[in-house]
Image (cartoon, rainbow, N blue to C red; front, top):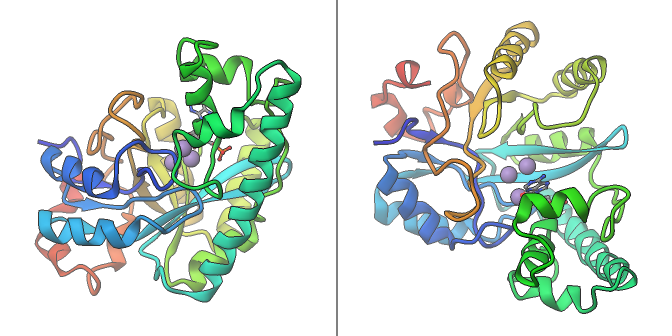
Length: 294
Ligand code: AMP
Ligand code: MN
Ligand code: MN
Ligand code: MN
């Protein structure tokens, strides 16, 4: 049985996960998840397949996306949940980011070539489905496969980050635009894994304030790597700013991810869950004892 019947953040092979949307859905269902959101980086391409699979597996799929954002020189991730995946504004945004990703991937490969590692674009593509959806994870898998690093976390120590080979600075969406795109697509904007960003405590507070002021709706209070202190901190800030709470494993792969689908711990029940207003969309929520779950 799942630790949590809600898993509102994970990836399929349409971004940097290794499983198809169908396999993600079936694995989640097998683990006991009942409400799942697949939130691929900057793309909704896997959602149609995921909806079919969820129907067959008798679990509820909440359409989602994880948008890349640049805020004060820091890359952030904003998850959009319960989005209408057919809006023009979302199509434009994903097309724009796809172009940035393609150009960045070419530049990353050139930078790796200068460091003595040729053919990285082709190498990363062996792990990807589209040259417009290449992420650092695909390059990291190529570097591990080549024997240059023992595992993915070693890659992120020596490559692909600021000051290391293969790092290319990119400018993603502004925080304001990301929130607007999600809201105009009828979704709720969730600040993903807020404990993972390398920010001073004053910058972190400024981010949370700005996120709320700009119309952000929720914080991902529990994720794969929050410490109990971080969970407490983001709980307090949900209450302070009137934000809802979300929870997600950020599962990418059975071989690479710390926790499995459905393995994220529930957030404190004092918080208002992100799904509080979703009853009209997902009637099965009405029979769910979610206050006790999360
Ligand atoms: P990108 O959006 O192309 O910059 O790629 C970011 C992705 O790389 C994240 O979504 C993670 O899946 C992965 N990633 C980044 N840093 C790390 C890290 N230190 N350890 C493991 N995965 C990472
Ligand atoms: Mn990822
Ligand atoms: Mn992320
Ligand atoms: Mn993610």
